[in-house]
Structures are given as structure tokens and as C-alpha cells.
Length: 178
Image 1 (cartoon, rainbow, N blue to C red):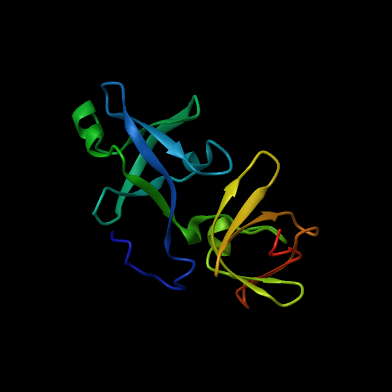
Image 2: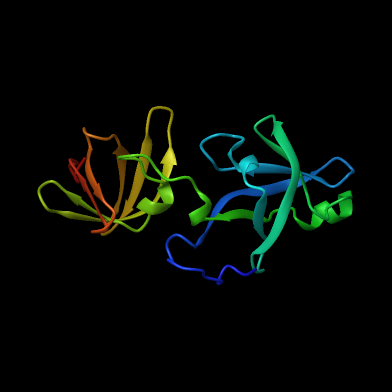
């Protein structure tokens, strides 16, 4: 299945990158996977993944088994039964459809839902759009790109005053000259 297949709402049905295949693991076709999920074992709850190697289309593949291994996962995928086959997937992105994710709780948002939103200060100054987010030890950070790049801590209530997905806007109490 290609990443261009759509079955309903475009936002809910886009494929989100949830990790990547690092390398083959052992000789029986297992793979070492580096997830980018909140919980290390988060990907193991999905019976099928979509893989995309460099320059290729998304391809659906079943998860046979997997476990947490160190700072990543060790997994076996359908049809991947030896080290040579596993090597084909090295570097591949791993995705799932947005619609497969559990519903976010009240005042909770997936990072992918925040990317692209415009960021406006409480005084009405447009800072730009959320390019991406990253984690620090204490809080997440919005990377906002506009006339310049701003790193805005995602601290609900104190800095992030509101998130309005329908309006495509995040309102922040942030001094752009900081």
C-alpha cells in the first residue's frame, strides 16, 4: 500500500513515522528497531506496520513478534526469516496510520497534530509555524519557524495558553526577544 492511499479524512489517514529499522539483529531475520514513541514498547501494540525504504513507497508488513531490547526493540516481521532479508530493511522508516492511534485525552495532543500550527503570542504577534518538537529532560520544546527560529517550551498554562486545532493556532505567553 502506498502512502498516497486515502480512506477518509486526510489528517486521520496519513502515515506517521513512528521509528526506523536500525539493523539486522541475529541470523534468523530479526531487526533492531529504534522507536520514536512515548513508551519504548509502543509500536508492539500494532499488528501491522508500514515500512518505507529510501525512495520507496510505504509497504504494509505484519509484526510476528517483538520485545524491548536495550534502548530499542528486537522484532521479527512477516517474511523476514534470515539476515540477508533483514538487511534489506536496514534504515527503513516505520509508520502507522494516524487513525490507528488511540484518541488523545482532554488537553492532550500528538506532536504530529501540532506541527504546522501557527504560533501567536498573547499580545497577537505571529511567531511563525511549528516545524517540529523535541524532548528535553524537563519539558517538550516547540521549534517555531518564522522570520527567525524560536524554541518555545511546551509548558501548559505557564507558556502554552491554548491550542486550537480547528483554528490551526497555538497561543503562547512568550517574549520573542527572549
